[in-house]
Image 1 (cartoon, rainbow, N blue to C red):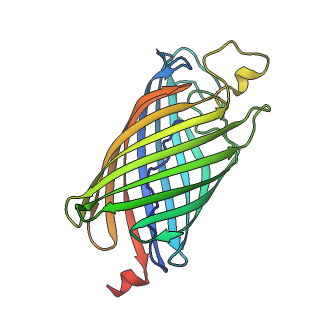
Image 2: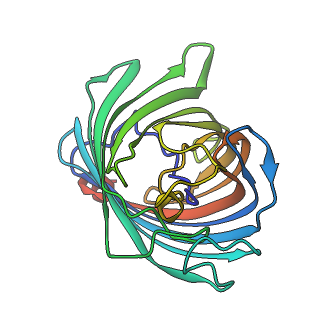
Length: 281
């Protein structure tokens, strides 16, 4: 719940034989918890830092595979600890591995790219507590991206949307399957510099409304089965240093939510593109 999945929509895929390695660092701060009633509660603060390494490769002009793994460090500062990690110091380690398989079903003026995703915990980490680095749950998801440019009125502007439905491993017989959506509006200020605004949405179909009076066994798992809902937004920019290396930055904030955190922060990273087309340029 602490780490925002990178909103790097994939409506447009690279040509066959090209790939990219991305390193992304992120820092988030949680000031309040938001209850199921939408009320903000100061239950202590959380600081979470992460580093993600992603590899993307296009096997054909239509088929791309992307995988990443994340290292997370988090700590809780407050008087209501919920698990062993909440001792006031940073705890961290590798979190989950993710793999996406994307297929460009339509790549004309409007690009439509369905995909499937798998999420697998990399190790047996502790999932309880405000500062837990993850929920340690297996997931399988299906979704699609779509995007288009605003030709001929604004040829340097684009829009893309994405939707993802995740089937999540049950905990204590409780389902936390969820829907995630994103909307991105971007503009190329120059061929090398682009800016973007984005919105992120999540709805959990199941789970527990928090806070609540816990029944037997619920307290031990409540962090993993929260009925988390949110709307978040961000602003970002990307700059291509040359044909193979680009840098990017993004700031994120929480607009509203239920049974979740008020998180805000930023991320930055670098992408190295490789492949036969890059070598020939």
